[in-house]
Amino acid sequence: MKWKQQLDGMQAYKPGKPIEEVQREYGLKEVIKLASNENPFGCSPKVTAYLQNNAVNHALYPDGYAQNLRTAVANFLGVKETQLLFGNGSDDIIAIITRALLYPGVNTVMADPSFSQYWHNAEIEGAEVRKIPCMEGAHDLDAMAAAIDEQTSIVWVCSPNNPTGVVIPDTDLRAFLAKVPNDVLVVLDEAYIEYVTHPGHKDTLPLINEYPNVLLLRTFSKAYGLASFRVGYAIGQPDVIAKLDPVRAPFNNTILSQAVAAIALSDQDYIQACRDANEKGKKQYIEFCEKHNLKYFPTDTNFIFFNINADSDVVFQELMKRGFIVRSGKALGLPGFIRVTIGTESQNEALLNHLESVLKEQGVFA
Ligand SMILES: *Cc1c(COP(=O)(O)O)cnc(C)c1O
Image (cartoon, rainbow, N blue to C red; front, side, top):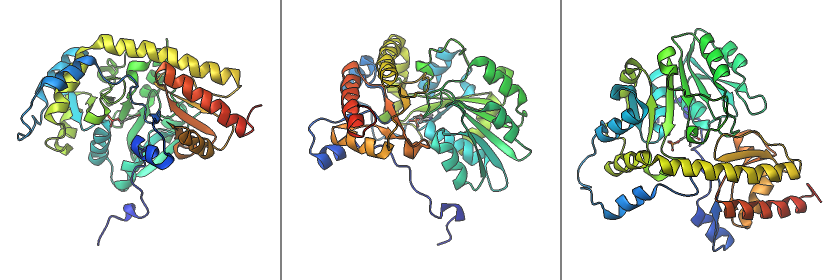
């Protein structure tokens, strides 16, 4: 058949192994997944209560405009309803943006390592991908600005960055935005914004007024604990949103997912509690890294990326045998590192005990 040439040799996204598969393969009763940065505490109890008591009519299409959720998010953020675009996860929004702006002959600039969907979607559209190496896990914003030319359509900025966890301070972000031509879309992916505690970080919402070419991406998949419901959204100027909207599939969020996202948003106390617990969990990992002299990147997320001074695929396998799923840095662009989602206190403790014995076995420390 007459496939797009770009699809030659292209692989589907390889997610972390599902818990059930690891249980079967290794004969384990309990498996803890700390691989995809989901909220280890799950979602707000208000959502759980709603799901137990609510019967929606599954025969009907959902509201394609997500009106109730739109109103809730617009009120929460203090933006106009026309400044929002909802997607089936922010993955969907990334695909929509890419489809709207990229084609053979144009290019797109991003950090490396960063979120794989930026380049994956760009390659499908046949655009040139310009990957700019990170410095100490941070975007090299000067080099990224220098990589922009007449043919650049999108710049992807992931803050905090997945997989390194590093957030971009407000002053650096503004200095960068001032250099980007105003006909280049800057996508600021903030999948982990709820976890940011860095003192140099400021509210990014005002940026869309100061720089109308900025689009923010947020999601209910991480801190809100609703990854299975697939709800993400973009915030931007109404004319940017209006250009992207026709590219969106007509019913890209379900009735149930729109309902639970709005409920989850209303429970900010829960988000605050998760952020506090995450800060404590982060300390467990940082103490471990410092005790064993392992290099880690400063993280403003619910995961941490650190150097285990060993083959990360081997360590990944050894941890899996012991019932823990993490991500090997090899798949994420930094072999020798692993990315671990910060879990509950007891999950973190158990993982770190096992990691200590694995790294002893590997001869990394005595
Ligand atoms: C998890 C993640 C996403 C995708 O989130 P969904 O809303 O579940 O599609 C987007 N960007 C980054 C950086 C992520 O880590």
